[in-house]
Length: 65
Ligand SMILES: [Zn+2]
Image (cartoon, rainbow, N blue to C red; front, side, top):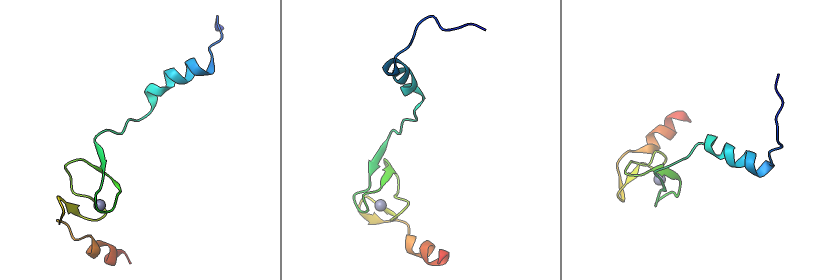
């Protein structure tokens, strides 16, 4: 088993590990409920798109209850 030749600082280690983090791209906040949603898609929580209600989400929530 080999041993490391030189000590790596926490900063160097963490800079390398940044690549492993999951990048969330293309997300915008919903203008109605201010939740993070995918751009150019209907909001799953309020069902609004372009200022109009596209999906009735109240039905879903009533069923769950
Ligand atoms: Zn919304």
